[in-house]
Length: 109
Image (cartoon, rainbow, N blue to C red; front, side, top):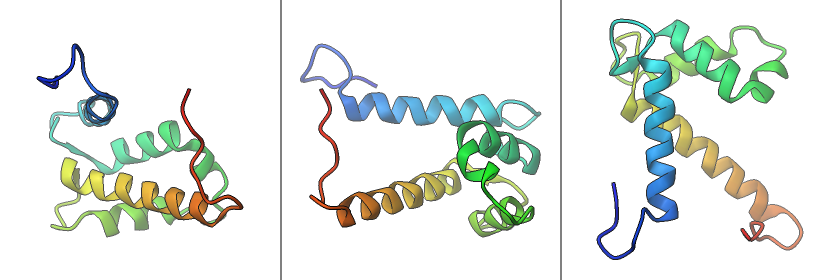
């Protein structure tokens, strides 16, 4: 995915490529590379969002998250459902940063 206006991918395009790569890394562990099974979702959460899962007091929180994300109730989290998780996390982070003194995200170098 490369913008036709720049020499290489933009920062946003690189972020999208990264999300695709992460999803495929975990979804490709069983026979269905188009969605995350319960086991793959747990591995993703423990590996990529370990600070969240390690600080949970409720061992069933991951199962409930998956159930809530699984909009079509097929027992899998497809890429669209995965993006709901990522978007929700991004929104929560944005709200946290916006409510902090100064209310601005740190500038990238």
